Image 1 (cartoon, rainbow, N blue to C red):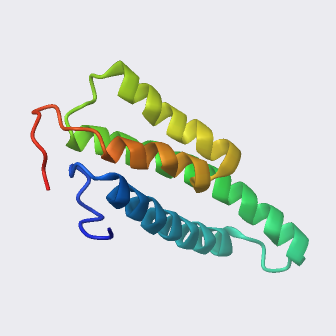
Image 2: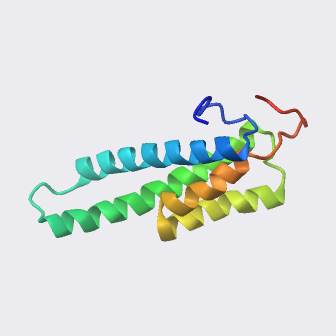
Length: 122
């Protein structure tokens, strides 16, 4: 379920895609939290810091989901498929509304698609 998480060209089963989703959601939350901590105002109140963290998280997750989905398509040689590119754009758009919770759903779906060459890289 959690093996080969950084092998983006791998064609994943549904169970492996769920593992990919959970692992990348945790990774995205940790990195987003670190970025928000370093960019935040140390003199801000908790409420202000929380709001700043939400803004950083929205920007970070939308960009990260879009880039990650495009990397998946690049590794699978599917960058010329309009439908899959649309799903990649939806990952970034979905992340604007619900962060990595929604954006990574589209990325995990893209990991289940075959490569252009038709082979199943395991």
